[in-house]
Length: 252
Image 1: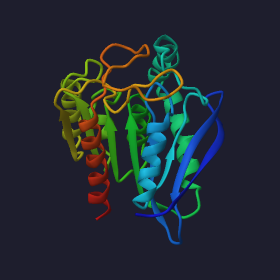
Image 2 (image 1 turned 120 degrees about the horizontal axis):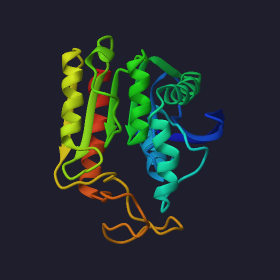
Image 3 (image 1 turned 60 degrees about the horizontal axis):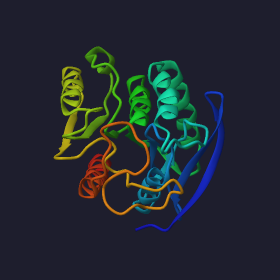
């Protein structure tokens, strides 16, 4: 495992002052890079920890921000009011994603030929829109994603390997939605796969917390959420191993 360093990255996008999280290995040489899109709740400690974990495995990882430093734990109405209009506007998503991607690619020691993406929820949609419009990700992993329309024509020039993950009990991102999107990728000649995690709900990686961020024992959220959210620690670890395995496979 690599020793790492982390820093906040401040930049402007979508009329907001964004606060991203950059993690990178210490040491010389060039490193593959990963762009991370957080879910609709906001850039939280879990996605920051994913960047840190990737850095220990030898990646430079930027966890973008698209809520201007805000998180919406316990405020589902405010989260939906911010996120739903964004997801309906491809131009806004692309602008947000490209600004963050440019920051990642300008980071010293990034190998621009070994570029990956990881998305959760709404952040998945952003990285998929980037891929659809020509960003040469070697592989993309998305977890309980928001998906573009399943249009094969939009993906015919995409060479990324794509992993789609969701829970069997997710009412927001259902297995059937992933399969429909996957079949569109297949028609376009894209290499894709789906992981369905039995018994898992939406955002199954999100550990329940109190309003101050301290963890709650058990699996049930005590703060207000949208329906269908549930924590599943075993599948959280399984999904993360699947992401790491995908990236290692593509590096070979």
